[in-house]
View 1 (cartoon, helix red, strand yellow):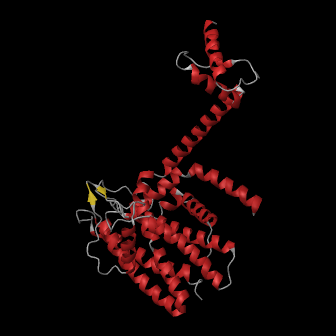
View 2 (cartoon, rainbow over the protein chains, first blue to last red):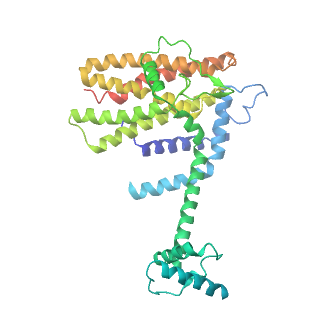
Length: 82
Length: 293
């Protein structure tokens, strides 16, 4: 596999897009990964599952606006340069 | 204007003594040039005449001053932006190596089985730089090994008459991308397991970069001794690197008190370390087998 840095950026963009489109109500709650189902007791350390749910929720919150910008740039670049 | 005439009188005395009088191309601004007359005028007049010869145009003065201020502003801005992303002190800590450290570390990478003490030493809560501690990770060896690997890949492809300059760039960026993927995966794994360790991003980068030494050795023996030599060197360096990584990372993730948290999390950390160790031979093989046919 011959990678370039550009393909790494494309893969990262696709992955972040994939995380951003996970819908809260329709999907995550149905498989038990909703944000209100995770905050267990206020124990010492959260488990792996709650860390993962935290990560998904924070990615979705933080990356919403930058993803719009970066996706627009990617669309324009792909239209222009193929 | 008594000031001006006084200066002019002294200046004329100096003129008679020194070089012939330069032709008056401009108004005599040297009268206003020295702020205090007295001891200053004798050499002040020389300097004033030379400076006025070179920078006859006061606009040039202003332009030079403006340009230098712009340049210094630009330099400050670049420094500020760079310091926001990369902390120079932390980076310098990883490059504080010397020759004996490099030699011993390379020996440790190839033959780690006799090394006893794998803990990173501290001095007052600050990890020691690599110059004083053999177990400390550094970024010098991975950087040099990466560059050597690229050059060696170019040489190997040239021997097989498959060389072109684009291939070199492709090889470099492929290796770099795999390092970035590995570091990101490790960071994700460490975040999910909430490991309270000192493994920063640069530490992970260092441990990922040590595989280039194994790659170089495998490719070299493959070039010298053929395909069999390549596989033997691959097996040896992979085993040595796996042992090295498992021993080093177990020390850092267990922590200073040795407890390390509840059992499932410790198991996850162990799996993470083992997965990282198992990933190394695969990536060494993947990145080098096309060089040794």
